[in-house]
Image 1 (cartoon, rainbow, N blue to C red):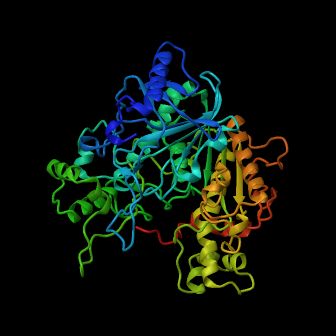
Image 2 (spheres, rainbow, N blue to C red; image 1 turned 180 degrees about the vertical axis):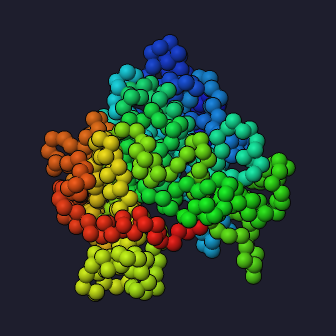
Length: 555
């Protein structure tokens, strides 16, 4: 549905479409009389009609909050204006603004159909499922470094889950400067409102929408699993640590989402230099951005000028100035606002301040997103481990033959993903919550020559969703399909009962920190649990991390 038609009754015109128009009118009449068609569902803002695709019913582009534009830029999500009649839910909403936060790059292209009006979600349900069916619900939080991605990416469409009796929900949330932004005048206005973490406010708004409305699609609001990848996995950890998110879900899956401080985690709101990972505060970044756009001062007038900038100006930032240094570049990360985000996941997990819910946490075998660990020589690399440098050499380069690039890749993987996944599983096991840890090492058959290091960051998503065909031009083997069915079955079982195990699947034991087993989706297409071959690597990485000897974060 076009953005300007959000609250208009769906209409079909023209003689050729008269029959379709008549059917739509009949559907409205029947629905309003309580005789809803199989594709109809009533939510708190109005009546929806979905479409049948791939053997399931899908509802696309459902607004879960009002457009965050104009005066609502950098404000908490607001209620949706109700609509009259039957709203056709057949098209995905536009993606949130994304593509190039910062000056445009040569040859760069903006993602298609982006808009600041982007707070839409999508629901897939089994065809014929009725209200009151109490099916398990899975809510996907997309990744993209908090600057890209959407709930309607071809790789994370929900038909595969719906065919297995699960309601799948995906949604968009504000990104980049729209999703995480602080400014002194913004902090002062409306002191009762949440500040800074607009992306997380959107995520909580979507979860509240699920609580209010998912029963209308046949879902059980008391059996909700949130899961996400990369920044989406970071978001899952943040929801687990956030007081306002408590009670909105019952289970969690983190796919390559870290859990340790410094990897897309919370930055101080207003005090520079108080966090070794993020010495530049969120408000300082906001002031620097305003100055780069020619906006001086930090008062209400400056904030009004920021809100008057076009969405494209907010996205791009200042024009490139030849010969000038330009503003500093910073990651656009979550913010410690003191209300929604009161501490990082690492802090919450160490203090055992998280809900006792079942969790799956894991990463991939070549999960080297980002470049947190840097060095120009082996000596410099191992010196980062301080008094554990010899232990690090024994774990990473026992015979001294590994090349520097390989060592850096392995350490980035362990630092950013593998060790934090173990840390999170350890923490949940310590409070008696069912915890399951995995490593995904399978590479699609046609990509093995290209991906010799193993499964890359995000390499598991198409297998989890059963969307291998979304990779154009890549042949799918029978083994690929079998692995996809297997991992999706584990995820579905977990969503149903908090335990991934089920008939015909290799046994996946609960995580026990004393045993330190890893459940691996192996390169040969099999799966099973066994001693973690990376244990020595993760042990020394944990020692170095706990001692505060972190890799250079990108500020």
